Amino acid sequence: MLLVVGREDTGELEAQVRGSRHAWEMRLISVDSLVNLVKLKENTEDEATVEKIRSILVPMENTRLDSLIDVMFTAVKDIESIVESEASRQETTEETPGEKGTWQFTDSALIDEKRSNILRAVERANDAKLVKKSRALYWNADRSIGVACTISKRYEHKNFLYWYAYHPSWQTFLSKTERGFFVLGGMDLNVAFAIPEALIQSKLPELNTTTKDGKTYWHIQIQQPAENQFRMQVHKTGNHLDLTPFTIKI
Image 1: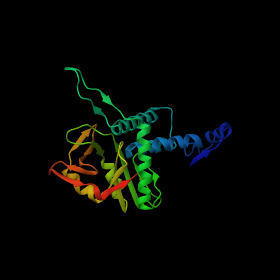
Image 2: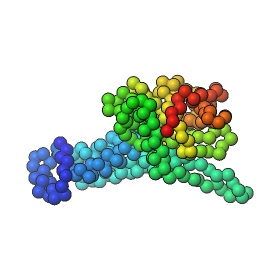
Image 3: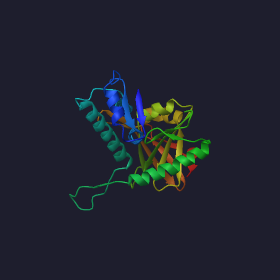
Image 4: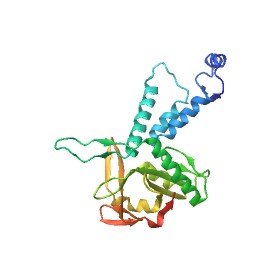
């Protein structure tokens, strides 16, 4: 049993729980702390991390704190990796011989604002209200519509202008909905691209991948061969996927 309380002076209640035979079957948490825990969960993507966060709510013996430290460490590491990836890390061109490039990051607050605007456009296009499941994943109330939304800055690269990572957990999430969309946004764009889950799944064998810290993701790169024309690279075949049919105005 989880007791959720809305007041701070719960000493008497805590003493009653500790002194009863239900001490090993009950947990107590304030509304504010529960909300903060939900926010932490919503900013993670790894289902294993989510399960560890949920484990905090399960009655346990806390003389040894290893399990709680493991939850905190895993959650922080997961969130840091997501923010770093989506901040679109880009190495600058060397201006001085022998000088190492530097990394430039997009403000996460600006990314969140752009994502919010894109999600509102997706809602209008599908006549649905989306609910946040995690930092990048959203669904409607009956979970028939699923969205994985990610943002890229504009790259000055000879082969692409926008770069994204597509994670297996996102594909699993979208595949369980009736209408799933992988939605790509650009920080400098007033449009986004809502690619149907079935289509992106069919292209996965043809995309390049990277494995880091035991986790694999696919590379998604977008080119702009002409004004108002965008296409996704399909690396292993050299073909391209025209994104015009999947464009939505923000």
